[in-house]
Image (tube, rainbow, N blue to C red; front, side, top):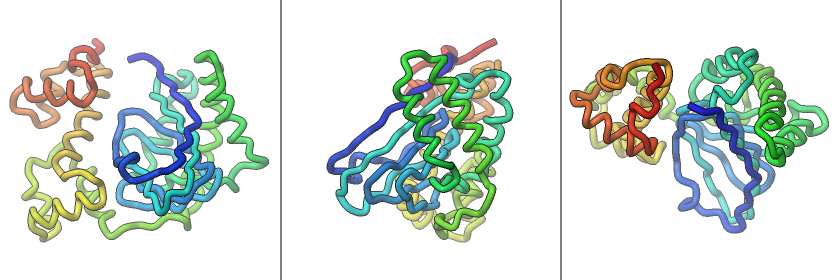
Length: 260
């Protein structure tokens, strides 16, 4: 796995829902809302964004923009993986992000920073020509963000009634063997479960579980777990099925991400 930092300032003249689908990825994201008229969905919870607010999305959190009208929409987006951070800072910064409750404390308001300094950091990450400069400003920015994560309950956060469902699935992600387990726990039918889940995440329950397991599999492979063992841990009875699912998700075979 190679260090990865991607940063851009994006502008959409006429945003619509078709352009912004719910998604999950295997890296971390810093999102800075500059202008527009929208809310942001993270794991069943909704954040009402103000100009210059920052959202920090940890690895595997499902998220998307919710468009309320076609007002021009501008934002900064930074994606990075853990090893893009200096080794001396990596553990404390990444553990702070990873230990954040799923779908909570994602938003850090603009008021948390003095004199818009975070925009200076972000702009330098976007404009930097070298990885070292990007890494420097990203590390400084993350230190500031991590100081503010879960400092106070975000009053600009709306919990949805499906929060418990998503929390339950993620807590039992590697052990759920069928939808029946979830239905029995919440006393609902499979039809109602999938309809409800599709509405809040844009995905079926099982597709959601599979993608999240594959992201865990990628981490296990990078940590030295053998591909066939990872396949079994992720609930695949046949390695060939795991191979196909992994390649479809990441574009490479499990062995390509395996590090002894």
